[in-house]
Image (cartoon, rainbow, N blue to C red; front, side):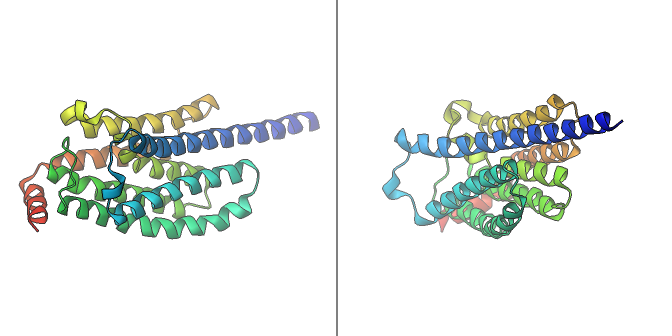
Amino acid sequence: MMAVVGATAIGAVQRQARERRIFTGMAMLIATTVIGGFGSFALRGMVDVAKVPWWVYVHALSLIIWTLLFLAQALLILRGRADVHRQLGWVAGALACFIVPWGIATSILAVQMGRVPPFFTPGVFLLLGPLDMLAFAGLTMAAVLLRNRSDWHKRLMLCGTIAMLEPAFGRILPMPLLGAWAGASATLMQLLYVGLAMHGDVRMGKAVHPAYVWGMAVIVARCVLVEVLGHMQVAASTAAALMAG
């Protein structure tokens, strides 16, 4: 009997360690996507660094810091430092409170200055950033509220971070060649990342956690809202008014 109990306990520890490695791997993949996407975009000469407004740099820097914090949090759990993880979580929460309004303001200012990528209409682009930020905010807030339920917390945090990867994918994918499918293609990449995390549950012999279903639903809803609302006359008129000054 004691041998059975001991084997069960060892198995549980091994499964927990494996799950932590999966989440750390996802965090590394996200960090590579963000840093590689923005970094390669600059190295390819796709942006005139000297002409980028300061508020765009602040926005980009805040997202990179979030990504590195997310990776650090995963590594802390992997190494058994849940105490430091919880303390750093308050820093991450404060940063999230900055990222959301600043990201929304950055999108509005970009439209106002006519900095709209050619593969998006002004109306669509006006809504894209704010809805990305709201999707991130909603999933991250839910994760914070469920922080005492680690299975929900870590999965919702992962989905929240994936929900704001659209700009990074926009710098990796050949967006000008995708035309009207540019936004949907970036969303498909986000869903692919959530799918990879879901596969982690399956590999461990678990049912796919409902947190991933909620994450996918939010990401899909954001894409649908952008496409539907962004092509409405009110969005086009608002964008035109902003661009006209």
